[in-house]
Amino acid sequence: AHVVIITENQKYIHVSSPQLKLKMRARALICEESQDTLTNEDLCFVVNPKNDKPPEYYSKRAQVCKEIRFYYVAKSANCETFCNGVHGIWDSNIQVPKGKVQKGANVFTKTSKLFKQNDDPLVDQMRMRIRDNNLILPYEK
Image (cartoon, rainbow, N blue to C red):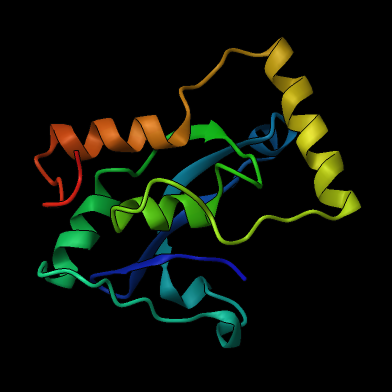
C-alpha cells in the first residue's frame, strides 16, 4: 500500500520518484498530484490523528514539505515516514519490508550514496520546514 496525505482541491501529497534520473539514484521527492491519478483506491485507508488540530493543519504541514528530495530507504525514509512525520510521529515505521527485492534496493541505495551528493535525511528536512513555518504540534519538541 502507498500512504498519502489528502489535501484541498482534490489533491494529495506523497513520496514519489517522478523522474527516471531520481529513480536511478534511489532518490525520492515529496510532491503533490491530483486525486485522479490515484490508482487502486481499495489499498487506501483513512488515518484520523488523535489531536485537537483540524485536518487543514496537517495539510499545511504536508504542503511545506513539498519538493523535499531525499534518499529512499524502505526501512526508514519512505511514504509512511513522510505521513507519520506530518502527524507528528517521528520515531518509527510499522511497515518494514524484508524481501529479497527490498534488500537489493537497500544495497543499491547505500551504494548510490557513495557516488552522489548526499541529501539530508527526510525526517531532518521535514522537521526543519515544519519548525520554520511554525507548524509544530503541542507534543513535539
